[in-house]
Amino acid sequence: MGNYEEKINNTIKIMLKGASDHTCVDDIKKKLQEAFEKQRPLKIKLGLDPTAPDIHLGHSVVLRKIRQLQDLGHRAVIIIGDYTARIGDPSGKSKTRKQLSEEEIFKSAETYKKQILKIIDPEKTDIRFNSEWLSGLNFGDVIELCSKCTVARILERDDFSNRYANHLPLSLHELLYPLAQAYDSVVVKSDIEMGGSDQTFNILMGRNIQKSYGQEPQLTIFMPLLEGTDGIEKMSKSLGNYIGINESAHVMYEKIMKIPDELIARYYTLCTDVHPDEIKNLLANKSEKGKNPRDTKMNLAHEITKLYHGEGDAILAQKRFVDVFQKGEVPSDILSLNVDVKSDVLISDQIVNSLIELGEFKSKSDIRRIFSQGGARINDQKVLNVSDLAAQTIGEKVNILRLGKGKMFKICKMPE
Image (cartoon, rainbow, N blue to C red):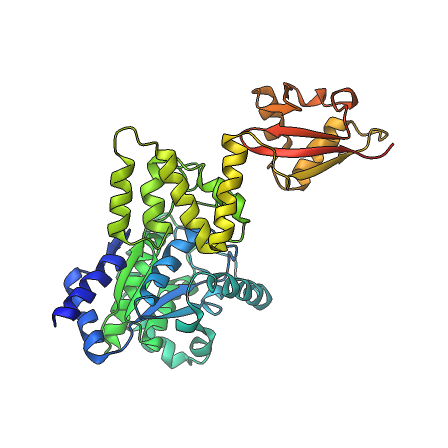
């Protein structure tokens, strides 16, 4: 029993690291105790609607938690909601969501599978599509499922109640979404369901529906939404404050170094597999007098980069960061921008157009703003107006353009 107690306490410590809410600890202990006694892994359910398949660190928060529990011997059941995606999760939406086609769903689901298996352990993961059981329900089955929940309970969801109160469209099929997702828990007999804090209603519904079908209700663990590199908004590709798990090692490392110092502890807790006791020690050292938080952040950037690219690439990314940002050296692998001095298009316009095409900046106005604010240099000479980039300012065959902090490009003249 003593050995079990130690394992259970350690599992709970890792399980609840960074969690924003969860089932009471006594229930968690009871479930873990039963699992240890029966020598069976717990089934950890995660439901994913394949609607935004480009995974970034914000998405990885829940997946990393699952991986940590897999490393402790438990098993993941990932449910790709190909059937519920036809409804679309209405969470936080003020209007009915567009239904997706089967082709869109399949394409997104395949992309999702490839990316999530970079984080969680494929050997301890079952991937299921909920069309496997939801498509087979007849009308009687749906009526029985609906009988497990009252209208009042459904309307406890803020988005539903707000739309209903404000006479906005609220279709009956949307009300079925939380019930369908809850039924997934019944089918796979999940022991734990994980999700973001925005999924609280849906996941708690799973507990209620399991009880109605005579099952022991699943534990719940909710993870917070991760702020992006700006330190303010939720990480989002559309806001440009994201760190993609498929980005190159040096880009990932550099983006992590841009997060505010106040988020170091949060990123350590939510984005790494470092044990909570070790994180506590690391952060205690960070707060010591005279300690530069940059050093702790570099360790964090290395730790996260290593998870997705391996130790070797993480070391190279750190060296590149030191060379570029601390020593001011020009890396050998920077992007090239070719300009044609004979073209009727102004050289400045050629450069701006190339930067947009490469996806380095959102808009031409963003680029021009960097120049006007004094953040642009060509061959170490400050340039305050992008229109000043002309043939006479580009005298050599290869020139170095610096924009902002750390962005560098080679400007190469095409042969005359």
